Image (cartoon, rainbow, N blue to C red; front, side):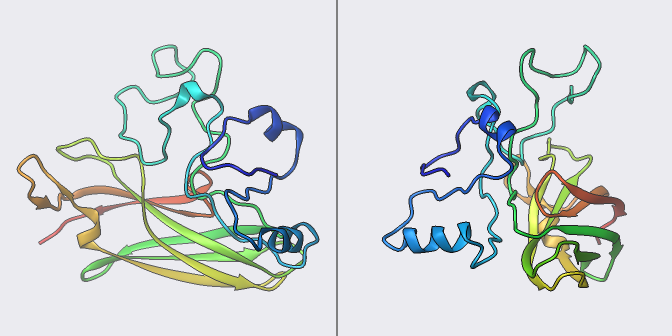
Length: 213
C-alpha cells in the first residue's frame, strides 16, 4: 500500500507483488475505505491519472509526449536507455480490479461531424465490476509534431461476470485539431489512429484517413 503525493519509482516492488493499493493522501474516512477494498467489500475501479516510472532518470514521463524522430525499438539507432526500459512501470489510465476485462471488435468510421467508434467490452472474471473504457487518438502526420496519443473520451460501465456490452464513442472533428504557430486552430486532413482500452498502453487500435471540409 502506498501513501504518497506523487508518482514513485518502484520497479522492484512492482515485480514482487501482484497488486498495489494506491491511497494517495486520503481523508478521515481512509481507514474504512481501505478496509472495504482489502476485504473485497467493494471492487475497485479507479485508474491512474499519472504515470509511474521505472526510474527517476525517465522523468519527466507522460503518456502524451511528442513523437520523436528516433522511436524506441531493437535497432541501435533508436532512442533507448542503457539500463532501464523506455516504458513506465504503470502507464496513465492503469488500474486493477478484482475481476478482469477483455476488449474486442473495435470499429472506427467517419460520420458527418465526428468519428464514431464501437468496441465490445467483456467481464472475463468471476465477479461484477466497473471498467473505465478509454479512447485515445494520434494525428499521424501534421505540420507540427503531435503527441503519440491523447485521451479524447472515456466511459465507465458496470458488467456482471461473463457479460459483454458494445460501447460507442463519438469524437467530434473539432477535437482532432491543434493550434498552429499563428495560434489559429486548424484541422489537417490525413491519417488518424484511434486507440481504445483499459489504459493508455494496452489498447486496440485502428487507423482511418480523414478529410475536413
